[in-house]
Amino acid sequence: MTKTAPLLDKDGVQLIVDDTIATVTLTNPDKRNAQSPALWRALVEAGRSLPGSVRVVVLRGEGKSFSAGLDRQAFTPEGFDGEPSFIDLARGGEELLDSTIAEYQDAFTWLRRGDILSVAAVQGHAIGAGFQLALSCDLRVVADDVQFSMRETSLGLVPDLTGTHPLVGLVGYARALEICVTGRYVHADEAVRSGLANVAVPGDQLEDATRDLVAALVAAPRDAVIETKVLLQGAAGRTLDEQRVAERAAQGRRLRDLAGLGD
View 1 (cartoon, rainbow, N blue to C red):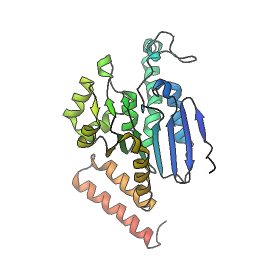
View 2: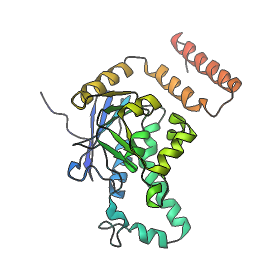
View 3: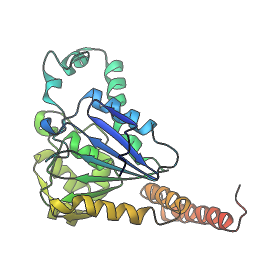
View 4: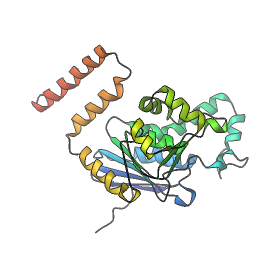
């Protein structure tokens, strides 16, 4: 069998596309897929590189851990080669600091795009930035050894890579606050019960379970999936009457399309 060549393979991120399914892999298992600004830029590039045919993006990490979070080298005076250290950024102006964090966040937001579904396959540690990366996906399949933890507050920081919004949406304000402030581990059984994970399986079944879910996701017509995702994404910010209007508009588009009357 011919192996598909990566569209992208740099800075700890690999992108492979097979027809309607893209797989984004974190490829630095020796460091438990620790994250860095270079990795975040590579993730942004992966999102921009997706062909229009892609319907589902699978996000995974090589090795025993999905991602152990931010590489602590970011907090050393020297930082990463060719990068300003976080200490230098803190000493700079507020405008530069804000714009830099916004660029980092771009690595996480593209996984929520309305035209794709994203699935995180998570094993082992998913800590801090790793937890937030998993939360950036629409769905999560986890191994029974998963350990989610939001450690930022324990380190005197806050979760700033877009993870707070989905976390509150999934588990509610009180549970989200407790998870963030204590920095404790959330294991597989709690993750499923609380809504953080869709399903938990033994580690040796993670790949198969993810593949089965992806197959189910691509079985439905693409336009109906996109309309449904957008409806659900906006539901929390709408009143019931506003959601009724949105549902009617979406269904009207679908019916016209099925009748061959679309634009």
